[in-house]
Image 1 (cartoon, helix red, strand yellow):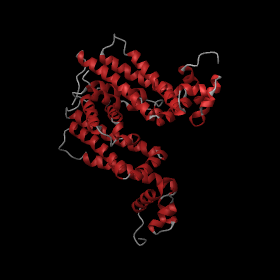
Image 2 (cartoon, rainbow over the protein chains, first blue to last red):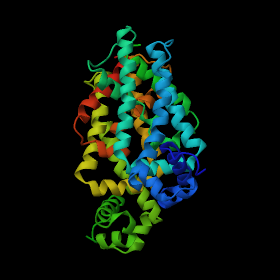
Image 3 (tube, rainbow over the protein chains, first blue to last red):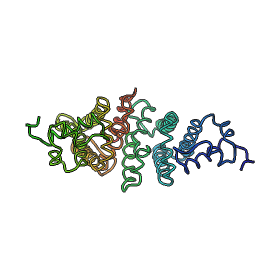
Image 4 (tube, rainbow over the protein chains, first blue to last red):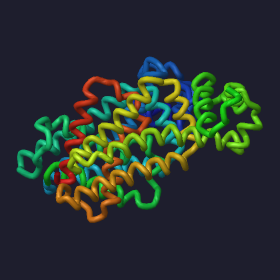
Length: 196
Length: 196
């Protein structure tokens, strides 16, 4: 392992694994360096402080979802309403998968997220910008008309309206009976609100 | 004080005051009895256990909001869309007032709420029933048409869509700049979703 180049990505992968094993309270840079077979000084050359490393690993975790949604948005075959439905369903599925498949890592990230509000704000800002893009595209194609003249404010409203299906605060409800039907009812209401 | 009749209401008032002063971790039945000038046995004749007393005081706190909304619903002069707007604004105002005017008591109730999920479920159920009533009234008057045939599911969707403006998890955002504009944008979206 030590003969491979020590990239930022390799450090972040190792950090996630250490966090999964030791939990957010106990995980430290020495564990990360040991997992990589390098000195902790080598890790500190990439990330100046433990706080910066934790911030970077949090951003990477959130970016995975943003990137999955960004990829969806390159699909030119969908109408704007179909894209919005698909975007909301993909976001819900991604969050639910993260919460369900690896609850320990999910809980760990909830702790990191509470420490890194700036990273979370950026993440939310990116998601709302994607929504804004879908909405503006729909207006341009005559597929949406807005209740409010400002698309950015409407994008924010769509994001807020669907909190229950992407905010980790509601993760406990994502496996309950009827949740998919409730998601569809909410999506229908939001889509109708955009006059689609 | 001791010569007054020891009513359930007096015990609950005293319990709230004790909770406000001592916090949820330290408050106990002996403090409540002392505040009322009675024996703790007298309190236990009304509430069999400390858990029951905490549950009752939580229910009373949540019922205040339900009752305020129920009172609003007796106003026959409003159209269904105007009633729904007013209902959502009243709920947001009530929650924001509770969080802002007495943050210590609000924090205390967040602890109690986390202990009494059954009481919270009942409260949410009552609020959704009120929404269902407004929606059905709007359908009957030809002022709403639904994206989904089931009014109860739509009522749930309206409740979910407005989480950011009534779920205490978001209390930290209720004083930030632009929140009222964001509330209006969301309300506009929801109202349009009901084709009003």
